[in-house]
Image (cartoon, rainbow, N blue to C red; front, side, top):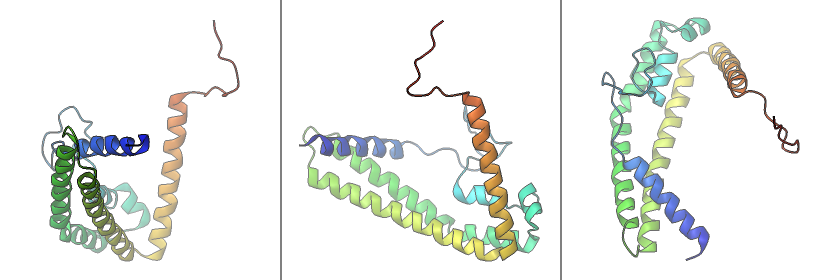
Length: 181
């Protein structure tokens, strides 16, 4: 087998093993050593969107979101919660099957690639579902709110990037010799 094919197999196996790991805690469960964001459950797309746009959040207030809009967002994300959970469970199952195939002494390449395709199809389905949610969520907000939200998020991202740059300190030029003292 060529080196690139082996690399695909190894990386797929690592990805499958990572996905097959026990899922993290759900809402209200102990997070253990993971960083707790003010008592909030771990971040997921739906949870993050709901926290950011909750009626009592700073961002929701800044864009002028109403209680009705917040309720509509909650209803939107609750409607697909079961589908999302089922998709994640299916991904975990497929990833475990893929890992099992890869753990064999002489893995069947066709079977491994079929498992990769099956896992990829579920990931694609979940990604499309998230995009449908995002598009539906955007329709709940007014044009002015969406514009203001984009501006605020862009500003916050820039501040975060600057903070990371400062935390890392100045970078050396690639061509500059390292200083020795």
